[in-house]
Length: 212
Image (cartoon, rainbow, N blue to C red; front, side, top):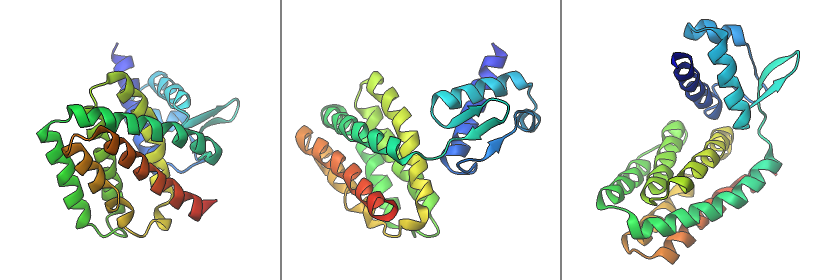
């Protein structure tokens, strides 16, 4: 049981490093080095690597080792097609179920983002965006949907970090987030869904312009 807890905790740490590009796409991770760093046996490292492989964040190559998965833009295109629909659905549900406390959290995120310098505070900005999405996920009241969205969002967050040099305008966030919150405050499910999808579409279009 202790080994299982270690592997799950190790998975979360390594996942965060991959998503935030502390480990770059294509980087080879050594099982022994990771075990030494965390003071564990190779067993939980091996299990964590397998979890990362299942999450499409790592490739296990026989006789070569564990390699951080490259960002597959073809796969990301298919992921965004699913993500926009499910995030829209989550926003629709949230319009009916979100609490005043959760709305205050969303307002606070937007106010903090207004004060960020996108060049020096980029990581903070992406983490705030993640909190924004996670707050809406939590408020939708559907655990199955939340689990799926978390799995999708770790890939979109990784892409945010990857394109940092190409994102230079904070209005990419501020042109869409307030509209989502306003729709939630109005308890307008259709509008909330529409604005949540637009938030995704704006980001995808920027990626398309910069990288494709």
